[in-house]
Length: 259
Ligand code: IPE
Ligand code: IPE
Ligand code: MG
Image 1 (cartoon, rainbow, N blue to C red):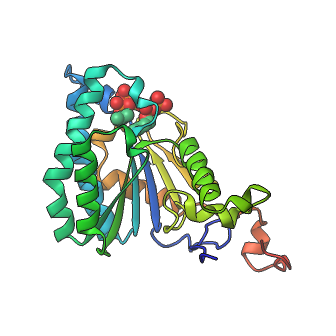
Image 2: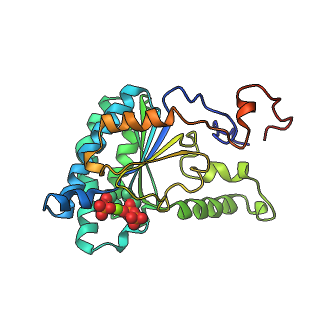
């Protein structure tokens, strides 16, 4: 059986340290542009710059995994010209930034259903992943045409194709290797910019015990300072994972079966 990576529902991470894995919903690009009487797409363009700053900051702060939601499985419902702008921006960003990511020892991964992307974009994604596969400073994962429900459904389908006998019964440990990001610890900190307080079908499975942080700052205006504020908020939390505060402080015995 595949070894489970450190699961945040099993092991209590050290809250005082920088979160190992940060997941971000980069929201508010359109409103940022609208406030400046610019077209929505100008907000997406500035959003790429914000991402660049946050990647650098995460690398410097020692965050191991940064996972960002770039395009949801529901974002196809947007006007066709915005969708096609986002696709070409994604392609341009990959072409322009990959060498820099590689130079900075950053490993790039992309999660989501690629079947709807055109051949050129799919090939560029694959090349970028291959080039940076062995880099170790930070793993940057971009969620593109991703949905949390898709992730779970896809994992179940792939698992059952490979192991039909599991149709009778299977465990979380059987399913886990088939989920996106199965090699990474679950996110410690989730950040959503743009003021909405919802998950919007992002990493539904993996966020089970993640600390949630919402800010009104619009994504293009989010940078290192705002990231540090989010991390400081995280460091004040008490992650209990079902236990009592007293147990965490060692004043009460731990449960015999610490499942
Ligand atoms: C997030 O910004 C980027 C994507 C969803 C691609 P939005 O485009 O959702 O910006 P708002 O929420 O309309 O301001
Ligand atoms: C979530 O933002 C998806 C991304 C940031 C890529 P949306 O702007 O699409 O979310 P909703 O529709 O407001 O929930
Ligand atoms: Mg939005």
